[in-house]
Length: 416
Length: 158
Image (tube, rainbow over the protein chains, first blue to last red):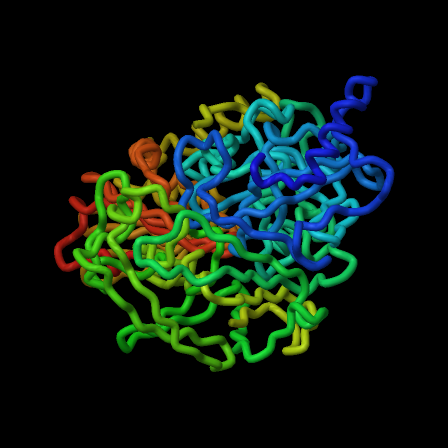
């Protein structure tokens, strides 16, 4: 709750008062004024890298969180959710049932198995107004995730079989109260789920225990809520400060600005635009080799790149397996390249992750690990660069949404 | 962790299971990884996939295209054992089907993981499992180090 804004404390008190009079949920009162993220512009919210919410059972390093307010559509019955992970590697808003007290209505009978690389999220698709800063996405689908508490306790075998990592559906397994997917695409599944049930994302569950795969038109899939804002809906800018120390920093605070080139605070300026391919990827060059299938992902909590063989970086082993643990902090020089040929050098450091994690710091620009199996194209799996949150420190990173116009042409692209 | 659960009406589930069991009877093999060449056919049938086979001097590659747009390649040794699988797609394939008995091994290894949130790399004595990409573009591979034919490097599984 430490990230909750003073305005919301007052609203929560009001909600408690109203609850005493028999109204469920938390009301935002009648003013209609949307609380801003605090200290920022109407089209921005604060970002916090602080190790995650209380109760996750440890520190969640290099994770950027924002507050998201959800409301019963068309009403002032709203709830602010703190510590929602900002993830440019996915699309759509998901909130833990355990963090949600608002009585939202389900969209048709839709229940979703949203697939992520290392887990899935299972739960009903609900309709809500989504508010961030002064921006509003009215009556949009989001996913409420949980195991037995969402009313749909029977996870289909096909969903479970997609992920040996199982579900991330509790505060401990998710490490956050929700996921805010603000990447380059508008829907979480897209055309594949509009025409076929085979991707296994969407189910129709007319009863709590009777689910069958269903196709879902694009407009009814869970969307990146930024794309549903009335204004400033062509992308986001993530602004995080540089980290000065190789051993990290206790916390970091930044800003997510909505829109690209729509206001005075989100102009591209001198940023280089990197077009991405149809899958949302570009190329990183290192040591004379090109690695297509590379991507920016604020939801990855490290720069995950190549392999121990290609980098010479030893694996940490033990509980930090998959992270790199060089004897001394090591510098890397790469070049990122868009699909139309624009390119820029990107330098970064790799520190010994066992040492980074030995203290209580939560924000690191040199947290790295391996990444041997990326999606390069529909017929190739190969090593690549997953530019996670360490890449975002010290930069303004623009993520343009597919098909939306910006001053540099339509998305999808990244610019920095 | 989420335990195994059922969905859909029990009778339908049972009916479907019986049908699939009958389909699989000729091979008695469900799992691709570590299974015989016949298990690839079981995967193909279960996934409703089309298949294309290419053979090299050291191994055969069975490439399956699923109706969901996934591409799965299964690598078969000269002795007829599936020693590796690789996949790409906008969604993840049925990894329990592809990994077979090794699915649980990977599940258990994942429970020992720390705070890494990103691509997956599991290096167990008996199986290597890797997955990467992001929503709408997943890829990965798994292989059995002890069963790699001579002359085949892990890089070949892609």
